[in-house]
Length: 74
Image (cartoon, rainbow, N blue to C red; front, side, top):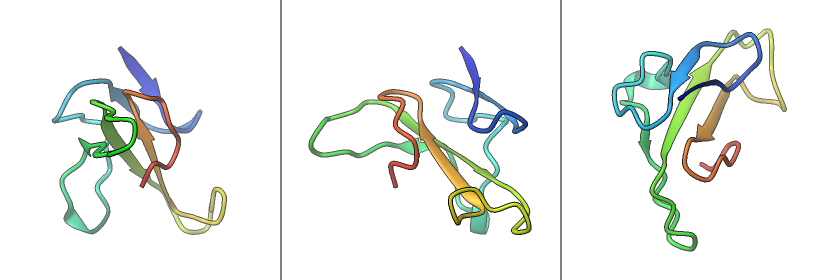
């Protein structure tokens, strides 16, 4: 299944640990395991960065979990 974090953003692939849509900030590897100890979510958290001139909710990086579908779970 494919999805977008932002309407005009990159296309991500749910469950793919090598998702081509993830734009890693600071050269980190994304997506990463959700690691939510409370919900035990097995999903992957995807990331997308964009120019700082276009902040979304005060940030230039957005995260999305493909398991529980939580926005910005970090």
